[in-house]
Image (cartoon, rainbow, N blue to C red):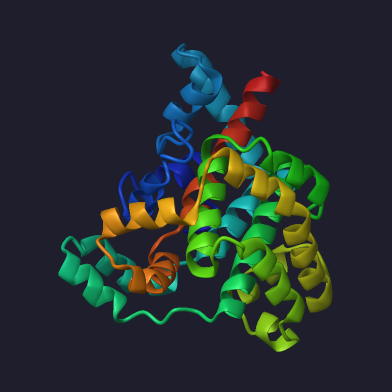
Length: 297
């Protein structure tokens, strides 16, 4: 998708049903009622503002489109980050196959083609996704991209698309592949990883030009500091939402019909075939720019 797309075009390009929406629906039990898969711009305006007057909805929409189109506002940069955090474009074939896997046999056959990531790689990916979330939040909020304190505060109040995205990161990038102590393990792995493991990471390669910091060392330290600072807020989110590995695993087993010994494969497959950051991140940016537009009328 071209970066020249306007916000209503970006939002309305999202699928109403896909492997991503199926995966996110599994998490609804942990954040009940928070996420609605809104893919129409007018519907998002109504949801944000509560307005029903069509002329006012049009005014809000026009103002939101103008705000998004101004690159100085940071909304386009945030959308770019959300896209690159997932970036399943190179694996469109895998995503298409996953969307078609209706039977247990087909899904298990697909899993056999996947190679689970080493724990260190998984931890680096998790850290990079969270630092991408930090930068996208800051840019779309009009604050410096390394404002960790503001970002961590927002995690404690995560709602709507932000809540389901955080739940997806906790479960798909943390609990399933790394276990209940995924935060501590991630911090330890990122601390001890070699510079080559970081610089050679494909996700880092995609994100580096959009992240704060002028060097590998600065961006790595930002990712580690962000992970460490967010630990308490994330643990609070997990506790308040009663998210535990057994519950997540049980729901995945029911939805995808997989056995316990295939869970590592499921985590890798979800990373390859879903784009929860891109999908819900675009929705979050649309919500923020619409909220600002409404407030400025």
